[in-house]
Image (cartoon, rainbow, N blue to C red; front, side, top):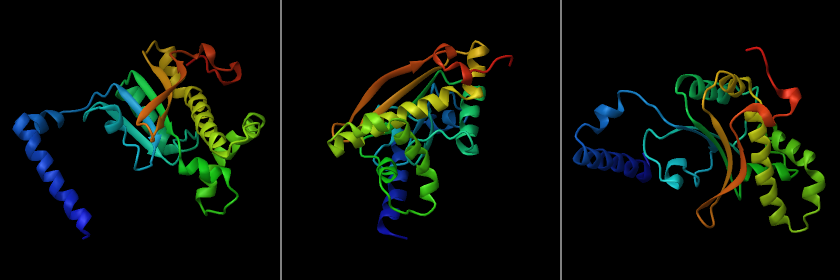
Length: 212
């Protein structure tokens, strides 16, 4: 094993010991079940740990992460996470959070062949195509990159609220708010994009489900 792996294992032992000093029943209580208020959909980037950047604790966040925080309707992984979080855990909020400097978004802006990653970031290329006029009006490549990160969150937000899972929860009267954020690694701050929904009234009519 590498020295870093050894360090991780030792850190775990130290952490567990400290938790028991603070509360001898900590792990016993944690093992009884979870009731997180938030589902977090974020990027797999190692520099964007959901709990750490939000000051959350174990049990606060139900987390799904993938390259570039995509919500793909044919991806059974994220759809299963979403269904479990909404229907079983009854989360009150869903946060989809991208981050500036995202490698997945950067890859989508390039013409490089990246193997199977091409199939995944194709979804972001579609976002670029939809917003091409706005993006190509931005002459500064770094600012264009940042804007595509934001627009990717906007489009994934739309894909999220358009799912039958979210819309059925609303139809059933379940309290559920969806939010779109972007994390700035240079400042450590979250940029709330000001997009939020608590019902399907703002969804384009063609995407609305009825008669659940």
